[in-house]
Image 1 (cartoon, rainbow, N blue to C red):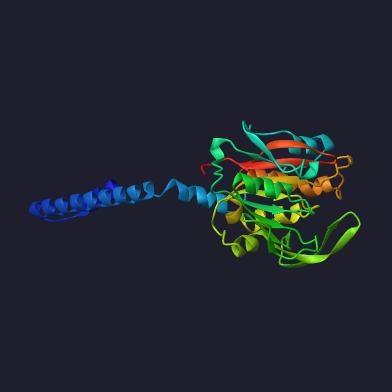
Image 2 (cartoon, rainbow, N blue to C red; image 1 turned 90 degrees about the vertical axis):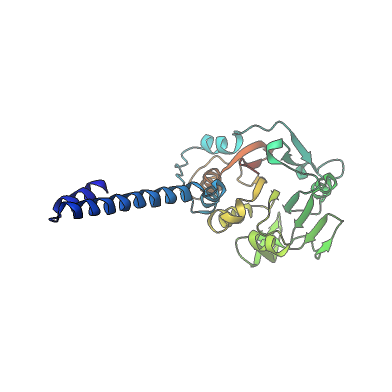
Length: 292
């Protein structure tokens, strides 16, 4: 800017007095330019840090997914914890429920789990409400979903609302079930279910998924279509239904199917905070460590 002004000044062929006038005008123009630049910098500095963080959480994932080359590589990805939890708490299971109904929630201060104001979405009940009742007794509002029980939507208790709907990556019907019992049932996307209960844009403390491979639908939909919803979830307790008794990592293996989603969850800001055996499956809790 300065060099441009000087060239303009040197090129003028006018009287000495007029040169002085032009010099003053050029200096004033330079001062004005510097003030405008300073004002623009101040405006940029005032953009809230939260806005930058939100763009990062909502935008497309820039995620490098390494190739899955071995069974041990897959096991490490779901078995090794990446962050520590000082206060894990178990909910559900015996004596009122089955051992497989036990789920863990990390109650460390950084997650700000407030018993008087916490929200849980639970998918996969299978007739055992021990987890839902237990965490409701702790103080959380619970929205429970399972289309396979032959039970209609109902208010189970003051803090537990049941819906005969399953989780998927679309709204409609889908073949769902377990063992030898499978049937086409009503399913919907997580984002739609969140909106339906008035939780759109609000913080969700825990999502529990024990849904016989439908966790893949949830992961696909959240990572590709609903990052703006995913960013509001503190923890996800998930049973990963990739049969660990099978060591093949061939192209059609379930380990290969899960692999990109495990990596993308980490790219989205989630890390495994607890991991334990679920027989041939693996019970993990994903935690999103950020300011809550």
